[in-house]
Amino acid sequence: MNEPQEQMISNKALTLRLFAMALGMFAFGFLVLPPLYEVFCEITGFGGRTNAAAAQIVAAPDESREIRIEFVTNVYDYAPWEFAADVDSMIVNPGRMYYATFTARNLTAGDRVAQAVPSVTPVTASKHFKKIECFCFTNQAFAANEARAMPLQFIVDPELPDYVDTVTLQYTFFDTEKSHVTSR
Image 1 (cartoon, helix red, strand yellow):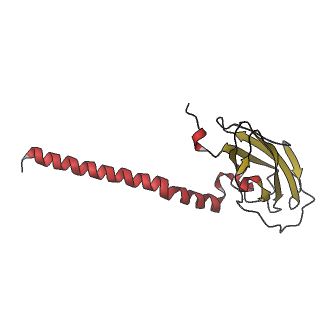
Image 2 (spheres, rainbow, N blue to C red):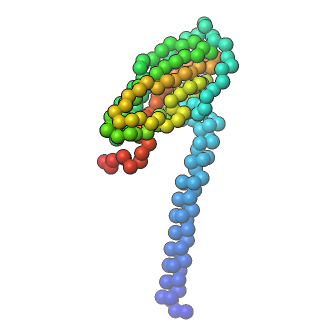
Image 3 (cartoon, rainbow, N blue to C red):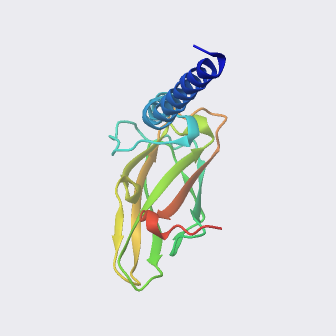
């Protein structure tokens, strides 16, 4: 074989190897990493995630201790929703069950579905903030221009470290229909 043919074969082999590497990286990034990240967050509480299913009531209230629970709400810029906590904060005793409500409103003339994603800070508190009932467990379907209160029932575990006196519960509310994302 002459040198130009060898160079052409070498270039084709290199192109195939690079394509295979790119395909492998894509598969790893989109198929392998998300489940691993979910398991990591579940085990460590990283990202302030709390329970994704209803918790069981097992603790007795600690009347001698008070914890401030702050409620923070966000809506993505492109999402056609109003979303807010009915109160900014509340004082709770660990081990006692509490109720809070959040109000959401569909600002469009069509039916929409939304999801709320919770986060708890400080991260150490995420393991101790137990949701009994939460609108964040499922997608929320709204009719055109519908507004409604959505319940949260929770307990702060008495095992919450003593140095934590304020817990912030943040919800980000977003439209689940990807077609409504606008480019900027």
